[in-house]
Image (cartoon, rainbow, N blue to C red; front, side):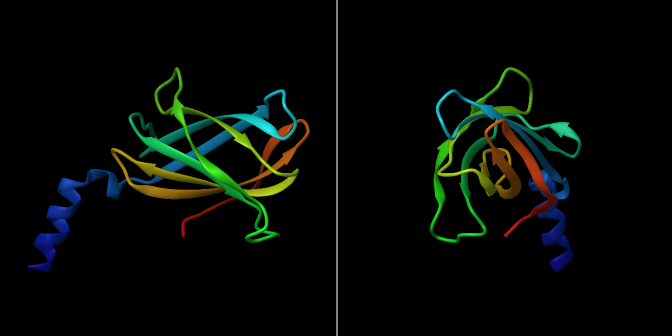
Length: 129
């Protein structure tokens, strides 16, 4: 009986069997500490379109002191591409949290270092709470 439930779950939610992957690139947006970010989302190696993404961030080195109110990303020009504007409180290492809904429900955490020139990945591991 449990086996049938598991099979039914995978058939009804094929995205559960696929690995989600997100990459992000951010460039200064003109205003101090504001960044235009492009998020590329894939599932099973293919672009994932149609997702609703909420993007927030906090500073792991200063829990509860510095965090960014989540903003909604909008669809970009390419499949699986999403755009968001982040306004951080200071330069440094940030945990960017992507909360997904739509064809898939999940949360991804990306670690980036934000500087005057943009943002670079600071930790190649992606953690899911």
